[in-house]
Image (cartoon, rainbow, N blue to C red; front, side, top):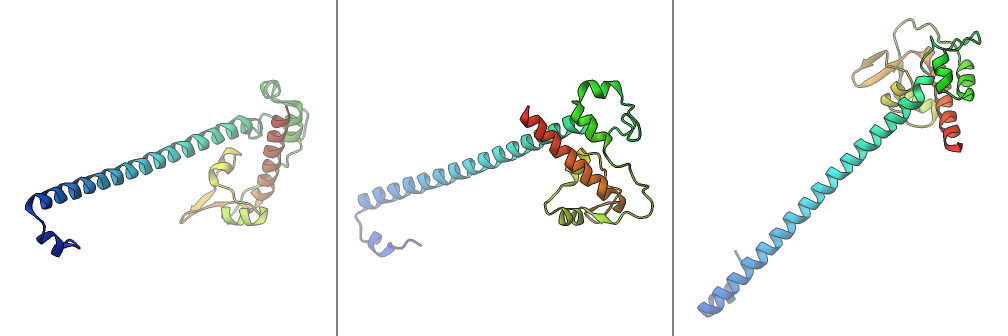
Length: 174
């Protein structure tokens, strides 16, 4: 029902036809504008998703570029000065020294109970399971949707975070 039906009934037929045509045109214009707004929102949403995916891919690639020098415990021994020649050739001496100073992995026995959220609470900032994977720490188990790690890994995770941050810092300074 139109709001001005009483006034429309009294209009001359030509005026009424013109008014209807104008209102149809206004409605089509409004609908086209609405469709265009929705298309723009969808395009913006898609662009945001692509940007986020590209950012995550770049972040993952950056983590992968830094991580190999840190997650090859067989290549660099912590109790001796024996270092894999290929890693030494690729890594700056400061990185090799940082890895030599890393604590030895603890024995992982028992049920993993350390949740990702607990790690974040202890550190005071949020971490993702993907980020920890990039540092070389796979979840030992999952409970519902929570990633679980061994309590003995907390010190190693902290040391890996420090090495990661220092590597990024030295890379930025270079």
